[in-house]
Length: 424
Ligand SMILES: Cc1ncc(COP(=O)(O)O)c(C=O)c1O
Image (cartoon, rainbow, N blue to C red; front, top):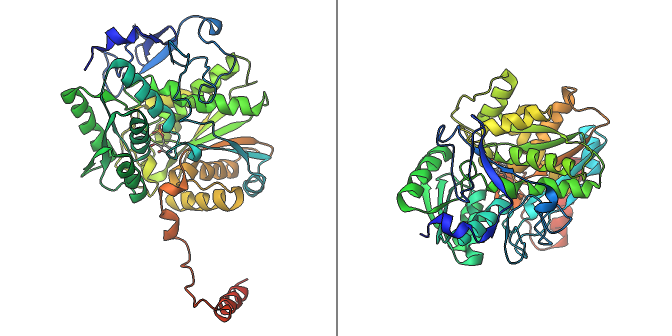
């Protein structure tokens, strides 16, 4: 392992310091994974805070680095000014879903379909950056603990550049996500326990073996990549404000990153106002929702249980930042039960044409709840971030009617259609 500080000099990270979210002390850039020496993990999460003006930081005018290689607020290589894996990551679409908006009783619903990322989730953004950083710092192995998506995205990004991905996932991780890991050739251990236990094991292993750490709550740089999702939304809105952005929450990194990205978009004049954030958790794994609604700054860990595997997190690692994102946007937090999540997955697919995994669709259940509670008004314009593809889970089959198996003759089809007609 090359000493990180020696190699970091070859990088043009925008001038920055790392600020502890608890004590506000600042520390010099590390380019690696670090928490506040005073507060440690999980409390002392650091934030990358830029120093200097936008014009001294970037070479282009776009906020987004993925497609065009220019970026404000995003690290880049000295040679090309490229921040995030060009050609590997592509911009994801903001899909207008008028039928679902009508069903939800709101004026407009736009779905940011993060399932269209290369391995099918928003996690491809931070994984691409983690790999770029690991390469620049001279690491050969990158590790993460994951409910599945960070893992498959890291495995794909590592495969693209020839690094080793060390993956710690709970034994209950869905087969589709394990299949991705197998395809990309990651070194995987199934941890006989929860995500929280897998996370702790991964942290010990990173210390023991000196791997690059891709865990978002201890690697402050990764939020800099996640926030490009908000930059893209802001650019696609072309200056028009939206009232709410809904997103599902596990550790709390994604909602924090959206907050940062929208704040930057507003500061640079791309977005008229920072939207209110609607954080949605499964009722069986809702420590951040509980803390926010109780008005307390600290979360009480829970034993998580939900079918939405990707947000099954009992001890969130980035709760402080997440709670600040909600407070800072006059946001709201709602917990939805598993039936609501599965109904949301169906609605998003059938009325929006976007197939998201349960954890990626949970935000739609949150919007419905918030609409019923009068929090989200009839005239509201809402963006939902669909964080992961439905192809990562076959959960929907659990509630779907079995398909009729028929002889390959028209008479058999006629019988099925007659049966259908009887149920109309
Ligand atoms: C599909 C999906 N949605 C939402 C989340 C929650 O993100 P965070 O843990 O950053 O809050 C995850 C995290 O794994 C995820 O995979």
